[in-house]
Image (cartoon, rainbow, N blue to C red; front, side, top):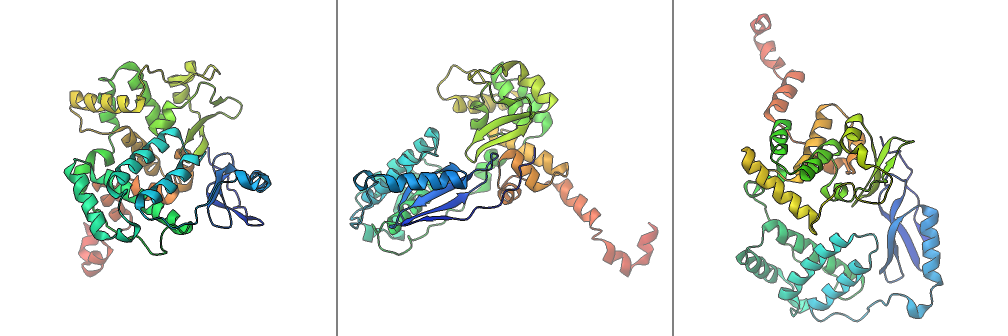
Length: 366
């Protein structure tokens, strides 16, 4: 189902409180708002309509000053203080999932181990190079280190906003990822490969893979799918992910796959008896790929496959993005797999050989 187009609401100014949109809308027409006080400290974030965001802002202003979030004004001495301030914001963000916060917390731990006692004035490129060398020596993947650097920059920008650090940019250190090292993460499997892997999987993991193929959902969205997620009147299935809830159009194939489990209860659709469900599914798929003799792919590769199939079917990018919960630009840039056949087809459709025929009319007869 195509997501309706919503007009972007205007920002809200409530005295010293400024409430503005960060991203959105989601499938319900709500936008992700952020409220900042006079010191540009974030005091609230969440998905809401403009009226709901205004009410939330008014409630914040109505709180006693003593109970409002304290804003640090004293400059930080060490990076440990800056990282603590950043984590305080992350920890209080009600829009972030617990799993997302755990990831940020892990980043904070690594950054604090190395930079915790480093002075703010000592944050230079040499310090970043030392961190990079230490993490690589410890066996960390470059993609993991890049994520830690992103969080470090976020913490630094927040420090500038709260006047904890001087208003200067953090030195940059670009990491060039070797695509040969991450071919598994970026690989889009073929339908035949998925079929072969399905035969090697336990029943519940096989069902998960089929659900991912049928919806193009993120793994976390499939794991979090509840049995009361089906809206029979509208013919949609509610998926809830990092970009907010969205409605997926139900097909006969999808109903035949999980229809008997959509009994209206709040129980999960997928039934696993392990704590780290996502990790278990990834391991099972990896092992099944080896048994089936298929080049390894991840659950996210199935999402890429869904995007690729929609693109090849001529689905408009904005419509495909609303189905998968993507930003259209991100989807086209990172998820569309271009093959050699695509390149040859474009060259034929664009008739790129016209100039050669113009110079040699005899080619027209061949």
